[in-house]
Length: 132
Image (tube, rainbow, N blue to C red; front, side, top):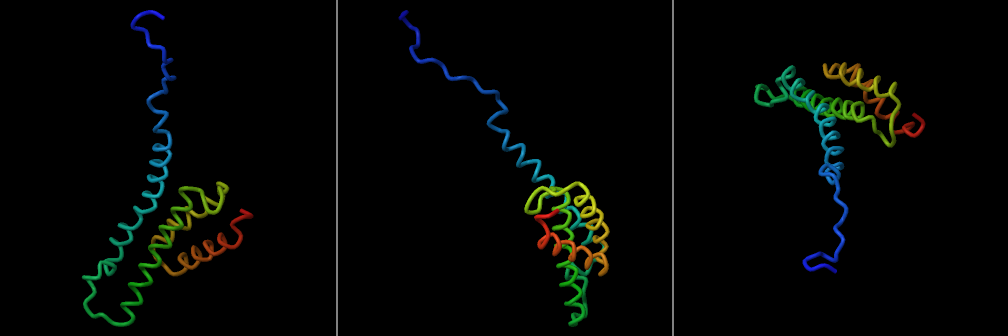
């Protein structure tokens, strides 16, 4: 061996971005879930009683209305998260994702009919999710 040479072979150099590939996949999924979360402020803006400080006479009907709106908002975010990520027990077909996205956006009005339809779709996905 020559004087000053290193007997250990240098390791293969990896590209800079290779160790971070999982980070980018995670970041993309985080953006998809965050997009579903943006419907929350819209619903709060259109239904100010959900801030709880604009409700002056607290009655049983007011409390039930606030609980309904909170549950409906969570359902809408859940539907949109499924539609944007395309995953519910397995990868969903594009047609199912499109229907979920439309139902989720229409349900953002918190009208009882689209909310009931969205809840029925979520139950159907739970029951028949493996076949879609």
